[in-house]
Amino acid sequence: MMIDEQGKIISINEAFTQITGYSPYEILGRSPKFFKVKKHYTSFYRNLVYEVLKYGYWHGHIWLCKKNGVQQQYCLVVTSIEGSSGQKYYISTFQDSSHCSEQENADSNSTNRNNEKITYFHLQKAMAEEQFELHYQPLMHITDGKIIGLETLIRWNHPTKGSISPNIFIPIAEKTGLIIPIGERVLKQSFEAYQVLQTKGSKNLKLMINVSVKQLEHKDFSQFVANLVKEYAFDTKNIEFEITESIFLNPSKNVLRNINQLRQLGIQLSLDDFGTGYSAFNYLKRLPFNTLKIDREFIRDVKINSTNSILVEMMITMGKNLGLNVIAEGVETSEQIDFLRENQCEVVQGYYYSKPLPINDLIDFIDNIAV
Ligand SMILES: [Ca+2]
Image (cartoon, rainbow, N blue to C red; front, top):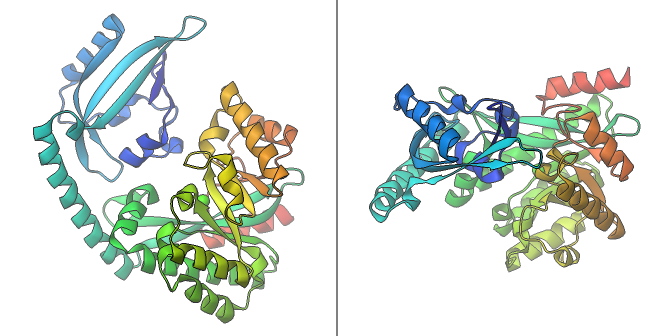
């Protein structure tokens, strides 16, 4: 997490989101006071700030409240650095306290196991009580501002803990095997929503659905999809499955067979969160992808971070040279749109156009563009 001289959070990394459950949208621009918990006296925080300002460094244990309401102790290190024109920045990194000492390691592991058990139980309950909800984020063409498709995103509306990020519960769903029934439900509901859009007159939109490698490892996955395609009688060329780069780590026979069969069904494949994972560019030719989705991490500060702007340019050029569609994720500002336009990346997704919407709001959104 990076904080500027005015005490505003200006950058977080993906690990931060994974640990806390907060996305950049919820955190950027806020004060670190956001994470205060009652377990610490005000003097604790005052002392921390004093030491960072005086010595440029602080480390110690700190309790933080994650988005799901769970308070956890971390090892925090804060260091101050100076920017090129003399302005100060503060970098805070925190690690699970288990990394701090062996004894704490043992304690924390058993706590983690308990958390997992609770979450597994909660996930099952969430399925039974239909606490999952699908939202759909529009994919937009920047030259004419028309919608060309949508990505299905899952939410967990917990009755007491509120909205829980998929970053928190999908890894547990994957670990426990619950990703199979959850993924099936996501597919079925997405198809239903897509059918609604078609009856409302939105034909030929691209339907993009996130598919976990764990789903692809299941031997019956492509058969399940084939049955669904038959049931809904969609033109499969409009259906695209988003898969992350972890697919390249020793894909099993089942994964390769499922991918083949999905391709035979006419389903397109998209490489999701491109740039964050394992893929050396030459991996790209190994599996038959149609689309690259450039991860939001690169898009976010593309106008202020020259490394990222070079990387994004490269990704766009490379994707196009390989004959792939290129989509930029997490687009929020007109500056980013300008940059992407200059670099011929025409399809984008992000808050600049729309956040993920429930199906009825998506229908309104489409109607409003059409007017
Ligand atoms: Ca995705």
